[in-house]
Image (tube, rainbow, N blue to C red; front, side):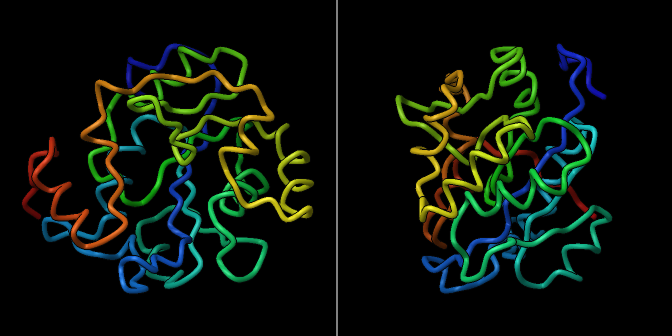
Amino acid sequence: MPETRVDARKLTGVILAGGASRRMGGQDKGLVLFRGRPLIAWVIEALAPQVDEVLIVANRNLDRYRAWGHRVVSDLRPDFPGPLAGFEAALVAASHDWILTCPTDAPSLPPDYACLLSRAASASPAVALVEGHWQPVFSLLPKTALASLQANLDAGERGAQRWLATLSPTLVSLDQHAARLRDADSLEDLIALEQAILPTPINR
């Protein structure tokens, strides 16, 4: 584990790769090439050293995701209901009491991401805040939140921020990493991300 970890909690790192990716033409976003490698490969490489376990939430191409050597789980609800369903699947499957989430379109995930959220929230959930905006897919959540999450999903809630707000999370400013945490919801976004602060390409 990296020396930047500042608490004793064991973390399950969760990569959310289960969306419908409608703005990317329905492509499975985690498998879209970025600098010659699938996005999921970049995220695994950045996240794995920071956590005790990596879990991938995916709803398509499951065998391709399993090829990276980590457990793969799928939403427990049909029709791509959004990140809350990904949280639910992860909280049910995680081996550890806390999950640290990130999306599959974060190829330059900061190397101190786990440290920043866990340091700020020693015993509470945490959500990243970038330039004044909540970033719900970058969250630190306890398994004890599962019952609340399932109740909200059963009631038809699909807004990740609305549900997270009920947990009174610590909001952690990641403004210093704003460029690294840009969304890549479309191919145009992916091009813009490639021009931002990015990892050095790796030849393999």
